[in-house]
Amino acid sequence: MTNILIRNAHLKDEQPTTDIKISGSKIIEIGNNLVNDNDALEIDAEGNVVLPTFIESHIHPDKAFLEERKPNVSGTLAEALKNTAELKAKYTYDDVFSRAQRLIKWSIRNGTTIMRAIPDVDPFEETLGVRVLVDLREKYKDLLDMQICAFPQEGIVRHPEVYDMMEESIKMGADIVGGCPYSEDSIEDTKKHIEMVFCFGSKI
Image 1 (cartoon, one colour):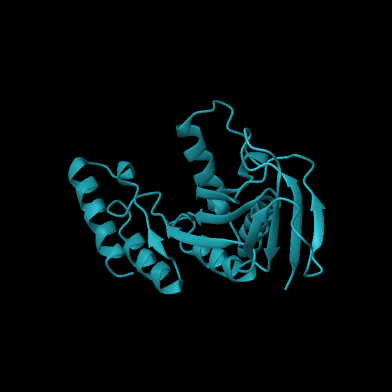
Image 2 (spheres, helix red, strand yellow):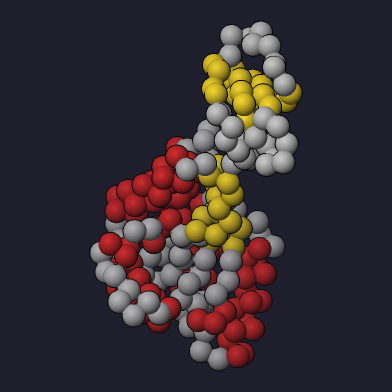
């Protein structure tokens, strides 16, 4: 168990600096001139602000760094979706794993310890993104609390095979499901999409 004593830290701008004593993963004491009685590693915050770790509530690790391969020249959603669809058709496990892991490492280094990861589930990517993120969730479980949201980016009604892929994603370890009703071709199909998403959610 690691013991840490942070000195001269600001918790709020208008308050004086204070010390923070940490044992393992828990803050056990906050106060002035705390005694280092457990051989703790001392860190001088030098008056900087100490914050809780960050929460990333919406991110797509399976799509990370695709801009490096095919830039979105127009900056529009339409081009982003078009480029992504083209690139997804060439995904491999190692490719997605490498890019997603790069993103996760970068996030952890910058203070993110909770992440909702949203991999696409569609005719191009199928359940590959879910499979990769289940493996990465296990690999980084001591550093990052990852929630996986299976996301039918290209629709369900217009791509009926996605229905089974979503069910498979849940079995593989997706924690929650999302929806993308605007990707359907009609208002009626949009309603069906939403109903299906709630149906998937009831199975988790």
